[in-house]
Image (cartoon, rainbow, N blue to C red):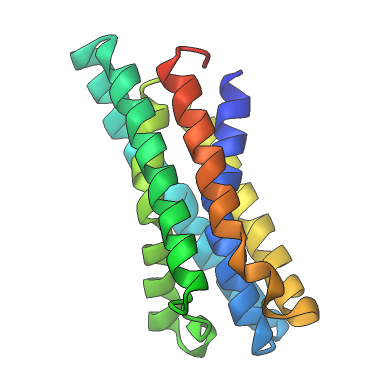
Amino acid sequence: MLVLAVVLSAIAVGLDNFAAAIGIGLAGVDARTRVRVAVVFGLFEAGMPVAGLLIGHGAASSLGRTTRYVGGAMLVAAGLWIVLEGWRSRRGRSKPAGASKGRGRLVLTALALSIDNLVVGFGLGVTKIPLVLALLVFAVVSVGLSLAGLEVGRRLGARMQRRSDELAGLVLIAVGILVAANVF
């Protein structure tokens, strides 16, 4: 069950990368840009949850059973935030699509997209998930979703970009409730 929580969380927070990669893909990308986007997004998407997991593991041992509720609440809050951001972006405030125009802009985009992963990592950290497992799952899912997003952006255009935030938020809310309910 812990692996399912990590996979679902990785997919949920990785959907931001998917959406951003669609935006980048709309501009057209070459093989070098694909690799750069996948690597940068993967590093941030895997690194931030691991930092959160380390903090969560420490909090779990010092605070005891109540950290499950705190961790679950943080996952729910992160999910709600993502849903709200998705609604806002549909009202005209979309994510930056020009992240492929420079390394600095790409790194800033990856950082902005992975801030929620710190909170998600903390929320999952209270469940004592092995760090190596979390690192691998978040990295693989992030790279896969980033590459898929670049391809979708290239092929389909902006239609898919608008709904991925809401789906990601709902998945995080569900995982947060399950963590707080001690299912994981």
